[in-house]
Amino acid sequence: MTSARTPLRALVATGTAAAFALAAPVAFTHDVVVGGDPADGETVEEFPDSVTLEFSAVPREGFNTFALSEADSGEVLHTGEPEIDGRFLTVDLPDDLDAGAGEYRIGFQITSSDGHATRGETTFEVAGEAEPAADNADNAEPAAAEEEDSVLAGPVGILVAIAGVLALIAVVVLAVRRGKVSRELDERTQHDDPNQH
Image (cartoon, rainbow, N blue to C red; front, side, top):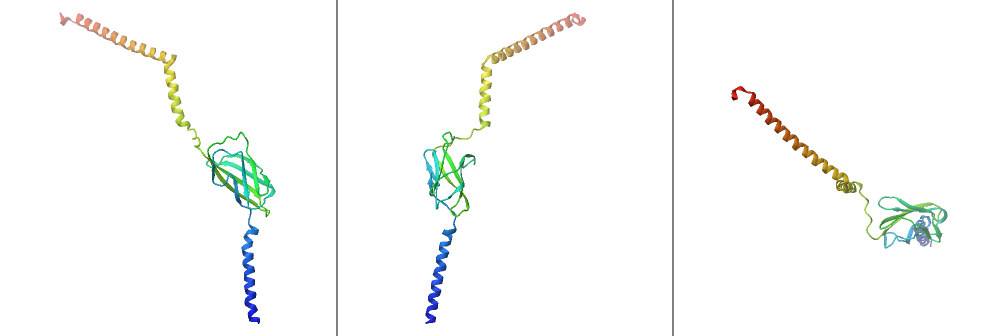
């Protein structure tokens, strides 16, 4: 009789331990994101007016923060304390938020239902082509070329052209004078040289 009960007790004890082992992670796990609007990894057509995250349990009030940032640059566009509606936490975004196509992050820090602080993030993408960053070096050269063209086409350009023509005339006149002087010297030399007579 005793030998028959022993295996039964051992089986019950093993089953109870297994049940506690399976239940333990659920009881002591922090709240995690299970949904959202936009959902994690979702691509939307237009930038949203608000962001919502759904958690696995109801977070506690206080010390809850959302931060929306650009995924590429890491620039934070907006931070705020979300409104709690059961397992849903929502932050309204300002109307004048300058955001367009591209990938974004929703970073969060909440007080989980177990009282522990929990951090994490989700991402979403706005469809379309993101505006390329302005390249100052590339833009500077065309601007400088246009400015130079405008200077040459204006009054300053006319004055520069006139000055060039006058300089050319001066060079020609100087060359002619030098040639004339040279010929006069040659003639005088021949006239004064007695061997020429």
